[in-house]
Length: 440
Image (cartoon, rainbow, N blue to C red; front, side, top):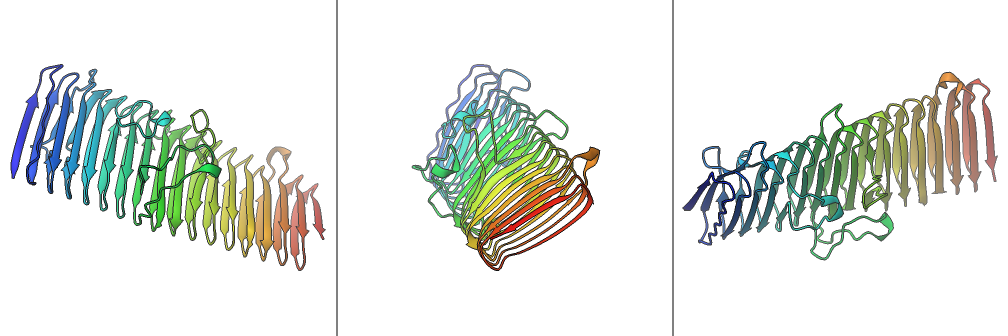
């Protein structure tokens, strides 16, 4: 083992460290002040940059201006940056560029302050600044940022990779991609023209947590996994005007998302370069579970291919769910508990699809199913302040079934079924109800 120790406390000082020994090398770095720079290169296996509280990697400026940068390149397997959160930058406008090329890479980074990471990340996902790239399998990344307006960009290629990002503060942004190829383009411009990653990596895990409950957060998260199976994305956002976009391509992948606060959105982002980005799952046996609490929250997206599952739960006023499923044996469950909720759901081009909708309050639902042997079940209850519930169900094909119940005031229901051997059941209880059922 060979070790290199650097320490600097003078502002505007520059440190350059380059090691290229046979392996098991260690660099300890301690810098404080403004405009510190470190460039570290290590090759072969089992190299370290900072390992513990006693032997850290630190660029520290407290609440000062900062503008410190570190560039770390490690070639080989089982290389590490930081240990137990002891790779740290503090201050403002600090930047970390870390690349690990090999299997079993590990990065543990803490940034404290504002405007750390990569300013302008949203407009340039592939910016070389403010990010971590791991080019092999079995990589692990943990990034924690405390403060406002922090950004981070992470790429991982290969299977069995794990990324965790936690951003505590307002106006932060995180972009995480697993199973990427250098020729892939991931900036969304609408789902019809997307190019998904092509590396077919599996068993990846992405976890992103953002915001502070009750705060004016306005954070953004974008996570993508492509081409493989058994991948998992977990998103958690607390605060106001949180937005998230998620993409998966492959089979048997899972997305689990929750948002609390108001004006939050999964799958529809406005005011940024990608103005309308739905959640997307492309492949078979995909699963998305979304939960939102608060007011004026939205979920928008699609699942393509067969045997996929969507579950959306929204509690609060003004919730909107708008999703699309294509092909066969799709299942969707929608729960909305609050006034002025709205559902638009479509299942196209297959057989054996099922949609369950349960809304309480001043709700409206528009449901479309095309194909054979499909089922739609709906419950709407309540009509506060005299407002009416409205339901519209359209089924086109053979052997379809619609069952709907409404309870409250001024309800209206329209069911249209085209084809043979279809069935419709309607139960309405309350005042001024109207039902129109058409079969042909």
